[in-house]
Length: 337
Image (cartoon, rainbow, N blue to C red; front, side, top):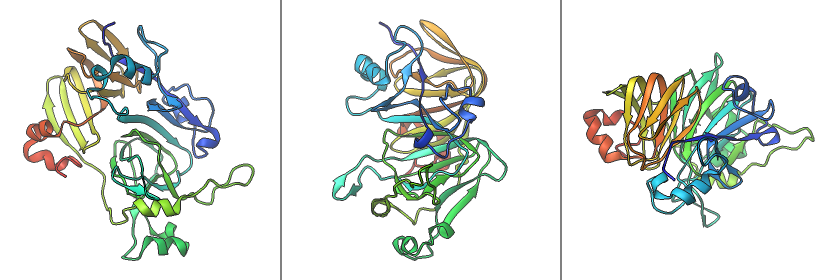
């Protein structure tokens, strides 16, 4: 059975799993969210128990993990190992916990853990909406600040607007604030250590567990970054704005104004902001706003057609991007690290 682009149906985190979640995934993005307090739509996910499903073509109803078994390297462009990336959309009626993720080389309690670097694109933000993006310790040990109950006053806040892009490497203290709709690309990992949860309790008066000791093992309080402006290059069918290309993923925005060919050889995640059409040698697929499509690495002659913005995430090809951008490579986060 021949390869084709996979339109993915998400799986949701909601209710007590995301007490901070809202209703924009359902009411704004038209996702089939199960309830008002739905915080996460895992659009392209191979997390065990949270696998997104194919919704189009001959393989409709199969899980992403099953497709990896069937298509293997033709799908992912890699050999063996876990499925590398996870794409989700988040809706924050209330702030997320203040948290940190480990890196690939980190150990916690003497054991190696799964790394998690991620990036955010702000899709919508209420006026004055903010994120936690690092800490200001002024040289004090973070443990001492936490032990003395002063973490909140040391958080580094940034006001956000639609279109802002933020790179969140492992070890960075972070949290989405309230009133934000967000696109997130990350390594496939579900490892999160909470430093603080705003004193939040559930209906039974129970607070969610914190993981302060583990967080302090992997935290990098010296990280101080700003939003990513990116750099734009012209191409056939429009232009591309590149934001991030580290060792884990590449993130860019396609500014589509015609017919834009997409390269073969890398698995691509496409999320259009408006209607457009995806064409390949054997067929075509009409896309609606905020559909999420997985384009297999080995699929040939793939073209996007329309007039809209399309968010695109993939595994990186850093040498090729450095060659394409030249001196502008310094504007892409992680590319020259």
